[in-house]
Length: 321
Image (cartoon, rainbow, N blue to C red):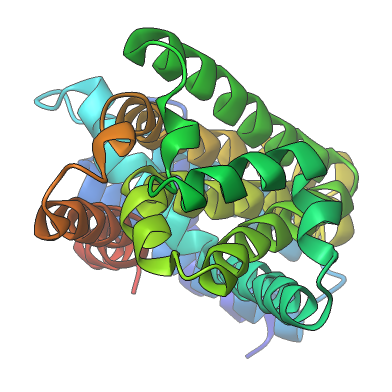
């Protein structure tokens, strides 16, 4: 199709969206989402057949505006906070799902390196966890309470201290994305290997079951959340490495904003993980095993649904699939 014919055929809907974006015309969020899809299709077509044309630059700007409208239009009959967690974040998670998959793959790749290193080097656990921690844990295992290290301090004090530490780690992992995502990768290498060493260490000392039902009561939300926080860091890095047709700084601003929203969504899970570690994990050896595993299963199902399944359902509702 000739460029002139392409413009003539589609200019009415482009002008329609300009009216919407300038608030001269009102549309429902679903209508805006449908218009966004059409504009994105036009942009892809223009990039393919008229890559150096002004119409491509125009559509790129229009697509950015339509994207913002789709992701930030609030329904008046909805609570803003609920809309953020159950509409905005799932849509962003759907858009950036490949970075979440990459984050999982990289985490488990490093995790298996940690397992292999621990099983093939008797000193590796001490190098990663430290002599003091290893010696204390060995004493706890010998005394019959492998998870005794989680019983120090008060419930409330432990909860606050653990949350502060975990949130700092998550924030550092997110902000490290500013270094083109490489800093985030280093955080994942360290934490994934440490988790692997921890589990392998307990396995080597015949306490794997105790560690599983103890550690993963809080660790399910904590580690899953860490992987999502790392994905947010990768999104920032990708916005710098792959700006597409946008100027690099413009791409960076969009990437940081969207990654930050995803990072914010992990905070409730970080709080719950700290609460479980401070109030529940310390009693895991006294609790029925089925209760421990029920908490772990519920945690895994709920956070997996939120980040891996709900985004597809919300995207389908907005006709983005």
